[in-house]
Length: 511
Image (cartoon, rainbow, N blue to C red; front, side):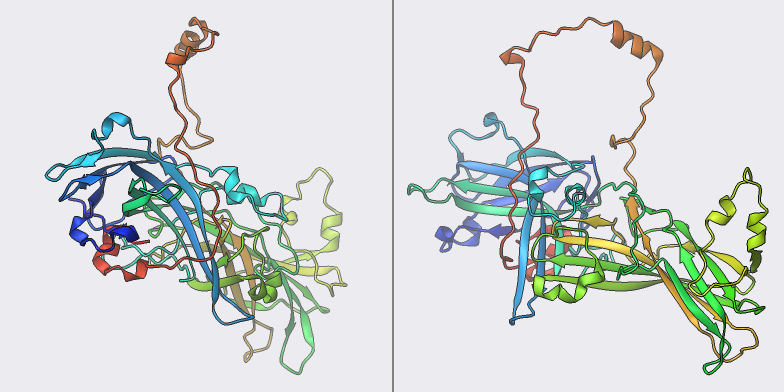
């Protein structure tokens, strides 16, 4: 049996009434597991029933059932004490209610249960008007109108023993809920409607996210470093033996499952680290030691909408602009690569290659170092598997108007110079890594191929058609429930922390 929702808001005109006199609202979601917040993805249907009971005759004029998505940020001010923030309602679907479903007259009577079913479909995209702020990048609106995932909203994990840890800072949050609001028209003209009760039930949304093209990383990028050069020395006060070059391309995305994004039992992707050693004279390449891999999880949040994709190149000026970044590092793996072999190359080898011979094997080799002046160099490659730990809950990479999440794979390798047993230097790369989310089977995700038989094609082709416009009586409203407009304003008080643990776990929220 589903847990009752908690009364969240009441009109000031009813402040002297007892809590018992307010209407009691219960939001029951279909197929909900008791004590857990249900999870949905793109194309999923959110079905349920709203039950309203009263202990005295209660007149009302409007009942509103909505599916809402909101984002909230809070940023520390640099120029003066305190915080600044923003609150953005980016999604608001309204459930149409037929007039015949309301009691006549519109008075709720004690001793009766009033039930109102609702159905929402998780959309793939948001309407363009939610991203009407100024932009310096033409492509950013395409990302801002994708549905963001639930982010930083405390929920009990499926093991019922811990809270979902998606590594979001307390200063930002993205929430989804089904809200029920019962209102009555005011007695005075031009006055706001009187809210009798407003109740919200929390849901978790992890949308399907497709793979994006690899990022074009610039040399001064503060988040990523896909190529690095470093001198190899025999000792601190000795001359260099050569120059080591590290390079890595962006690996294939890690594909999450919307049902449980924190449970990854198998290798999700692999990254390849390419190494090149340009010797000074006839020096031998260094011996490779150990490779460490870490996942750098970066969250960007702002009190004003982002006009471009976040970049740490200008992070020093962010505090003055009401922007901030929060980063956590998640250890992934450690592996010994001492058995990796270097391959010797000479420039004459490439000159002797026939023009019809494939050069794909050399296209992936790192380019020469800045000090390369000879014709001999060595190359090696290390394949690093990437497995996401179960202790964390990962969300897909996303960029919204106020909040963004990006990932970087940090690869570090140790090496030993020839005839050197004391020093163990290391070199590191930070490669972009995208996290995507697969669509649920049967949700009609874009790009899905549907097989139909030739008989079905012939039947549809030869069937009679009418090109006359439909009559007025045949027109049925099929438009989705309306969205609200963008609301970016001062940060309202966050009262969700006032809820007792039992309320938060049940999925009911106080706003």
